[in-house]
Amino acid sequence: MVWFKRGIPSIKTTDKRDTPEGLWSKCDECGAALHKKQLEDHLYTCPECGHHFRISPDLYFSFLFDDGAWDEFDGQLRAADPLEFVDTKKYPDRVCDTMKKSGKSEACRNATGTMGGSAAVISAMDFGFIGGSMGSVVGEKISRAADKSVELNAPLVVISQSGGARMMEGAFSLMQMAKTSARLTRLGERGIPFISLMTDPTMGGISASFAMLGDLNISEPKALIGFAGPRVIRDTIKRDLPEGFQRAEFLQEHGFVDTIVHRKDLRTQLIKLMKHLG
Image (cartoon, rainbow, N blue to C red):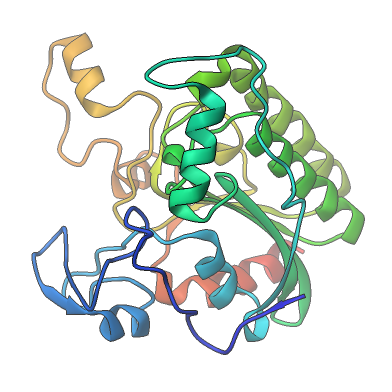
C-alpha cells in the first residue's frame, strides 16, 4: 500500500512537462505569476482564470482516493521493441532515456483504493512519458485495470492524457484500441460503472477508443479532445474551424462530452456519479 499525507505530495522540479517548475510559474492562459504553494492549494489550477496544468497519475491518485491512500498494481510492465524501430535513436534507448530523465516507467499507472468508502480502480495516463502515447504496455495496463474492476466489482475511472498511439510500435499500438475497447465491454455486461475522464490533451487513437466509451464521458475545462489536431484538419479541409473547436466546451455543446468538472470538484463529483451509476 502506498500512503500519502492528506493533500498533494511533493513534486520533482525535473518533471517539466506535467508539473510547474521551481517556486514560481506563469499561467499559460492568463499569464499570472503563481507561487508553487498557490498551485498546490488549488490542485495545480490557476486561481485567477481556472487554467488546468497537466499533472501526473500520482497526483490524481493522491486527491481522488480516500485519505490519499492507494495501492499500485502492474507497475512492473515494460515496453518491448517488436519492430526494432529506429528514428533518431533506437526505441529501447528512447524508453530508457525517458525513464531516467522522468523517473517514470510508462505512460500509464493503475491503482486501487477507496472513494467515498467504496472500492474503486483508477487507470491514469501520463503525458510526461513520450507524450502519453499508447503502446502495448499502456493498452495492457488499461485492459488489466478493467479486469481488476471486474475482480473487485468496483467502478473504473480512466484518466486520459495522451497525444495518441505510439508510432514506434506501429500496428501493435493500433491494436490496443480494439483490445481496450473489447475488455471494457465486460464491465458493461456486469453493470459495473466506467467513467472516462478526458484531460488536456486526449487525442488520436485514445479519443477513438476507450476515452469515448464511458458510461459517462467527463472532462476537465478546456481540454483538447479529438482525433487529428486542429492544424491538420484546417490544412486538409482548407477552411477555418469554429471557435473553440475540439475543446471540451465545444464537444459538450455537440453531445460528445456529458459534463465538464473543475479539478477542485472532481473527487466529490466522481463519488456522486459512482453512487448514482452503481
